[in-house]
Image: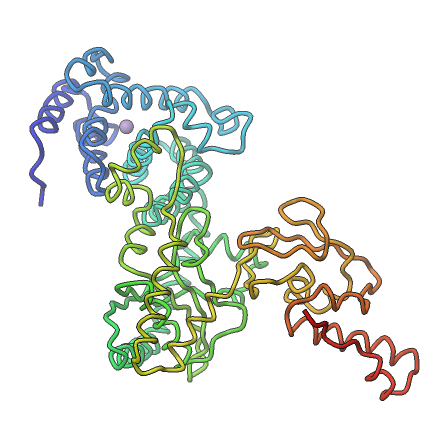
Amino acid sequence: MPKKRSEKIEKAIEFATNAHKGQNRRSGEPYITHPLAVMKIVEDWGMDEDTIIAAVLHDTVEDTDVTLQDVKNEFGEQVAFMVDGLTKLSKISSSMNDIDTYLPNTKDNLLRLLVATGSDIRVLIIKLADRLHNLRTLSSLPPDKQKRIAKESLEVFAPLADRLNMGRLRVEMSDVAFSYVNPKRYNELHELIENYSKSAEKTMQKIQKEISAALGREKIKFQISGRVKSVYSLHKKLAKHNQNMGEIYDLIALRIIVNDITDCYLTLGVIHSLYVPMGGRIKDYIAMPKINGYQSLHTTVITKDKRIVEFQIRTKEMHEFAERGLAASFYYNEQKLTENYRTGKIQHLPTSLLWISELQETAAKLKAGKKVDIKKLRLNLFADKIFVYTPKGDIIDLPKGSLPLDFAYRLHSEIGEHVTGVKINGKMSSLSTKLKHGDVVEILTSKNPTAKEAWFDRIFTAHARQKLRAQLSGHKLSDQLPHHKIAQKLPRKKKK
Ligand code: MN
């Protein structure tokens, strides 16, 4: 159903229709169908009126007799500024054959495009909508153009959509583009995903029922649905894991959407009480959002009939943001954030604060004498954790107060045994540096074991202490000391 549009938008539609009169797309359709489609896309994303108008007018200055001054006179400075940015963008992109000349001297495409368009992120949002419609209608172009546009979409625009956390757009763009770049592989993986979904259908239904019943018992309001991995992200993940399908745990995931953050953690507890969670696969992107602002709890479990299933748990707002990303936050925070979009600063909301306040609320509820349930207490464990990153970007959670050696032993006890130093956020640091939330920690190791007793002073977690103790007694055993003497020599926990 078409929305009721403002007079100013209706006027822009008429203006563009006149300007493009007589022009056709390669498919034979009147040209105006394209700007109208782009307009509908940004409208669906919930963009503001000026952006919708600029979308209708985005090809007028470049392809018709209309001048920028005309646009300015009729629709104001804001709209003209965006149309100008889009005209510049399309000039760069039509005069070049390859991405390196398009975006020279920087790996940061977002920055580069912002510079090219005058730092208004809304220009890029329209550009993304423009590209999406061009991809949807790519079949009418000649093969060489298809390939070029598809390749550019995969390399520049889909990653851009990802950075703006526009998940739905990223998935559609990259899958359509990939089907042109590598049709054989696309079909292969598409079929694989379909077959897998079919084979897993009954199990998934059963799990959905079990989860629904359990959440119902806890009086948690929720929506649950299945989500299938996109072809392109499967392709990328397989490439990362040597084409080993055994490494892919999230071909199908169940997505649970609940009312608030407290319910996210409660739901995680419910799932873990039903199924066995896989070690190291619980990811708390609520406490520690991805760089693009994505939030969710992820966990992978093994069901009673030995299926491996991933769950993604999030609130409605997080879901909206994950699907529509920047555009969604534009809609909700237009007043507050417009200045940041104009100046090109991308920010996500200070979700960490939101999480803490939600957690306090839960604690208060529990304190107020409501029945204390062990499962519900589990979520307090998250409060004392910090999340740090490996140089590859894997998230490792550690208790607050952890030191580099705790991190090393968490990665692997052998890594722990061979530590020679640590870089924190790229800087050489001491092994007694307390790790902070969000640190990137790189452990330096040597070939020979370096573990020594003095390390007990530089360890915080029981886990690392235990590993170190075992390693040190192992060394001594090989020195042929009688076992009871080793036990005496083991250092005591230092008093604070
Ligand atoms: Mn266009």
